[in-house]
Image (cartoon, rainbow, N blue to C red; front, side, top):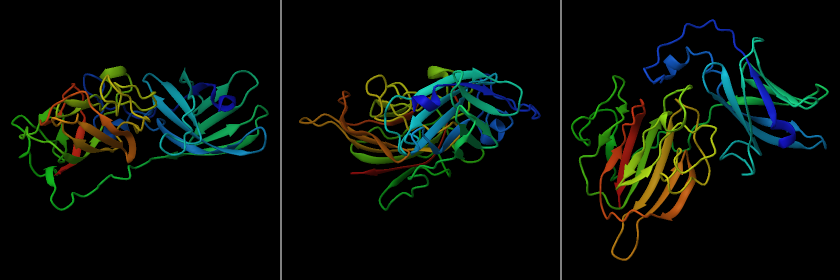
Length: 318
């Protein structure tokens, strides 16, 4: 992988779009607004195969992250994208600023390979400018997106009402739950929970200020954060906050619907609480014993000042 994706990135687009109006923190809450930013269409995931120097073909994935002001970070994964073949070895990445040729070019150091991104395709070239393969833009969907509540489940939010949330809960005009809510019940114990969430597009934000809204289950926080293209630290998306990092960073690009599917067992006098978490259908925590000893509690979706949205939330109590 290092022979291909230790590169410098040069990027450009023709700025023919009228810029939309993000909020005061630079957050675009909907895909329609974000689409007016010309860099939003460049950001995303690309996957395909290329021919190595020894003649063998290798699958590769690249995540391109918009950082604002025409700056992009590109992250490469040998074997495919996270959750879809990545061999979990070291990632390769590079950051660079926009230029004015209407394309995006990943270029290795002098004399090396390069890759040109244009119209949703990323073509890899050898040092002799021979095409080695093409990566297509992909928009992945969680295997559990749209999962219907089974018989016996309680629909905590289906867009129709806020009955299961304490006063102060809000929803958008198009029926999405907004950040900063607490469940009316505080006696949840053992359960299966499904939730779908959408993180805002905030290209100029960094760290904990980029699409943040943690989910608390009986006091244990599972982070929700725009961590697309990051390493997957314990305070990033999918992390058990500041304690355990996810086994793999499965965060999709912002404004793509994502899922958490959680199996939770509360603490007893004999056993600590235990949690299993799937992020976009991939297990990122498997039967992890928690430090928080709460035997029951509520569900809280944090308000960190960013417009995170939720839908299709249901719970089955065991």
